[in-house]
Length: 618
Image (cartoon, rainbow, N blue to C red; front, side):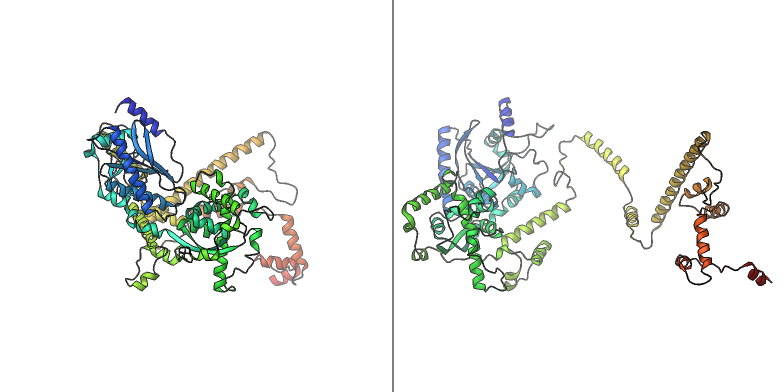
């Protein structure tokens, strides 16, 4: 590659990444027999028209979340191609619908090469991560995957670049495809994984639409009938509402473009994503809607028919609030459909209510009473667990109707996620960086050195797994049954090590105490003579005895017991004397001292005088 190409590549790699939830697509005409720029422009313009016609035919009634499919001619870095970006928001189906359009377009035009990417990078490779070759990693995958004739083709690594990964530029990728098409890599397994979501198209386009009956002002119904796609920005404004946009709605006196009067019930076409966003929002009714919604919302008390009316009114309230926020600055919006709504509102203000449709006009609208089942929103926990476990329903049609949750496509995607995760867990070659570790760029000598280092490290960290497990059970307080010989030896070693440690600590404490005592004696501070008071003081031997280690054998314990008999007992003489005097004053009857000593487990003998004791001895 030339230095100029390298500089271009660095500039492209350093370019600002795509914004979140944005899809970018590039379409190139690559024909080794045709290098005339004028012919290439003509060819690209023909493909652009074909792409627009295909999109219009497939997405006639489709509701885009934010932006639709748009494509235009672009010239950059000496390359002429078709380019487009789409902000799909939360609707991942919008992204895959565009991939389907480009996939179909590539099959119809043999000289067309397509590249798609989003804010996550090469998302087609992410879909096929389980079957990618080991040399392909996220660090070097940019501009390496292309769609041609409905298949995926990979640009291989440069065999001359072995020191560091090669970052391709767009110009380098196009040059490689034009000059060396036979060197491209095609793997059917990648096609199956990368395009598995496309199997549900084109049926998925119609399945992604949801019709629902809502109760809304007549003016809103008129705008929705004239501009069906305006529902997307209206729902999004409500879904992303903030305090400032809600001020006029929550006010009791501020003027509204869509006041809650002259209400009608009509069927509104949503995408399933938009319907779920609107349905899931919890929203307290604004002041001017509260009178309409002042009913008991408990389904146990409200009849089913009234409950349905209430739900339609709540959905209409949310949608109308979205239109109210959308109309606040509609004339300055970047969206063409929102600006068209602003024009309709201006016409309505000039013509008045006479321009609004009557009830008879509304009844003649298409699908005005259509309401689809929204059970796809419900997920049963038991069904969810059954899907995770991979259990299939019975083969009968009746059982299939009751099995699973959501849609069939949702269940299929969940099974695919689980199967991919299980495959990754079962892949013994999986490492921290992905499913496989790339070792193709390591020389033989380096491999030998690495193997030696690995063996040394393995020896250093090797341990007995069974012994470690049993030791952890003991630390956690879990009793083991029938310990093995190795476990017994481990326990004995641990006990001996603990005893040695305690003995060393004991010797260190005794040595420190002796040094402190000698220093205190030297300065005349330490007084070891017995005190004149009734309270006894611990001797040094008693202090040392209290510091003896807890682990001792039987001989040490016996010796310690003999020493205790000879050492001075540390008690409070006054306290003992008072207890005995109190017990004596009871005269053999029950009393506080006797009761207290009894609770402590002490049984004191009777206090006999000298005469009784002498007569007993006789």
